[in-house]
Image 1 (cartoon, rainbow, N blue to C red):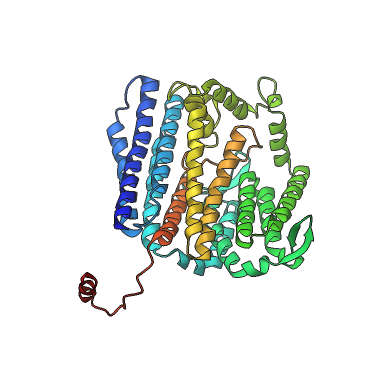
Image 2: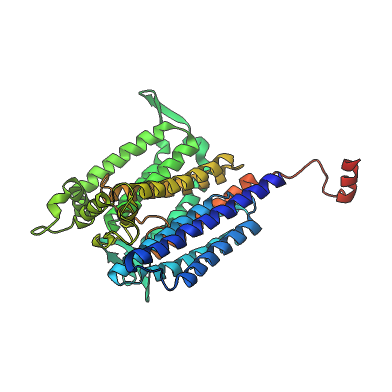
Length: 455
């Protein structure tokens, strides 16, 4: 067991070095592509990035030695690549978002360390099921308060406190996963009872529809009052997935899918913001170019850029991703598609797929139901967010305004996602940790026990 454990940690160290090579190498490649030389601050930048990753790695080794060895290197690679792409856009637009993002990464890694050090047992979170739910509701309502709430790009999802701005829905996402998991552990048996059978599917009982109806109304409320299509889809889809995993009843998927279709149709009829997004998606070319409102510029320039990138991309610093509005945040995946091509885009999606796979693996081997549901919910949150973002960028679905985890510019999103990884590592550590040897009584002298074994 110790030999396997050492080999696992050796593999993690190798992957971390590889992740740092990706991040620092991409930063250097951007400088070479744009200015023809390696950036002058490559040593300080690489040292800062390496210090953050090493600090995270040492913390995992000390307080969660049996945690999944793959999660941290994947996150380090994605975060480093995102910093390099934001720096590339800074050089073209004369902005300084990459420096701010590195500061936010420092805050995220700091909270990652604090979470692992203070949260020694993920099961303690179950005690705060309803407290987390109340805190999530308060956070979701904060943008609606006059004075601190702000409307940006049509969505009222931001709060401003002095010079700082924050998106509280990112933190609410984590709190809602804990709330859903704690609630479903307590009420899973009742929610799993079958009602009427229709078309070979056991639908839930009418008396048990309260939770999903409440979550449906909350999602509609977010859409109606905050015009936040992405968070509305994310929260409702997250609850539906966790409900299905907890009960193993396909009837909940049928009911949830029906409610989603009804809600989508009603909001399309009565909310102009949803109508605008759908019409923009259905005929984007009518909203691009001279003589139009030019609302389709993001999508059209992204399609041009990804087509220009082709299979292997133009190379870091060689494309024109700055033509895409808000490329450093909402549309950073389009910038990656132009400069790294289809190959780089698929590699990024595979990295996200590995994060989700490791989260589901931790859920499968977890020894407690609460840990299973939390790991499933956090993995589903990342999967849903990536699907919605990439689907919107590639024009598969209407745009929603969510950020790409670990890649996009945005402090609140980056910090929340680092906390998500910390919780997943804690659950993974508890699941992989060898069970205690109960064959030796606690008051038995260990030296005498070893002598007996040797004899």
